[in-house]
Amino acid sequence: ESDENDTSATCCIFHVASVFSLCDDHEAMAHENVKGAEDLMKAVAKSDISTEQIRVILTSSMAGVRAGGQIPLNGKHYTHKDWNTESQLGAGWGASYQWSKAASEKAA
Image 1 (cartoon, rainbow, N blue to C red):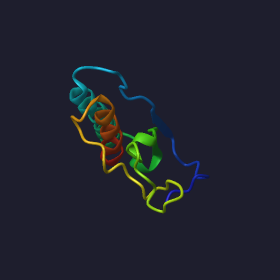
Image 2: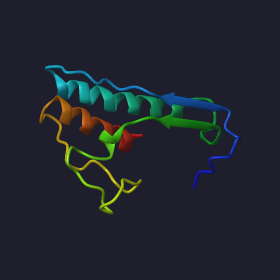
Image 3: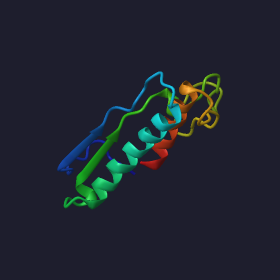
């Protein structure tokens, strides 16, 4: 379990952006978003700094947690147990983006 007060990390990497754009090729956009998270984690794994000394902060959005209309598992509020399980790649640019956010988090 992570200790948020642990200051032993010597390197902190922030992944703060994914492509969010109304576009015709939304599936390619979604795959590029997931690839960005995967590439980051591969680079961290290959670095000369031990993984115990690296913190990776992958920012996301509610899109990773829920699809439009998806209610929280507990019926009240979203928690770490909730995942967007409804958005489908290819169902439109919004759904593809939402799919990419959940897939990116799982990849990381």
